[in-house]
Amino acid sequence: MTRRYRFLLPLLLAVLWAGPPPAAAAKKEKKESQAVIAGSVFTEQGFALPGVPVTITPQGERKPKWRAASDARGEFAVRVPAGHGSYVVATDSSAYQNQSQTVEIHGEERVDLIFRLAPKGAGRE
Image (cartoon, rainbow, N blue to C red; front, side):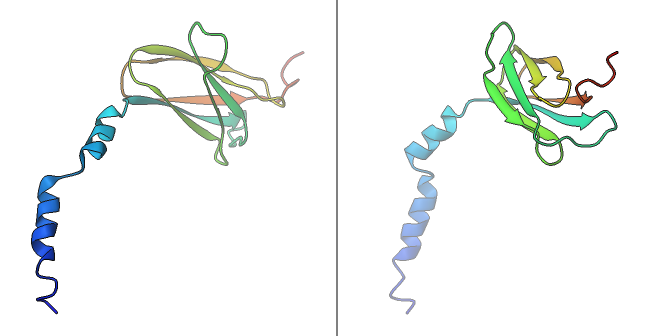
């Protein structure tokens, strides 16, 4: 049986020596660098608030460019282009008082935010 597969070893070595096909190498080079805007959404008491829509809008633009929603732990994460930029991150809940925060991105980095939302109508007299 070993004689039958004797030709496979040189073939395998040739493939490993050559490296990945040019198309795979080109795809790897085209990958854009990214930054991450992440955050957690809580109630005023500090409990996770799942399902809260979050929008991310580049500073100076009117319409949000990215949308996300907090998961079961109240967390969200969105990838944005790396490099210098300012973004407005806002909650968009119908049941809670919405908040917004402005973040600066300077390169390939991660920025973490915390939102503590009060129910609508609470605390306003």
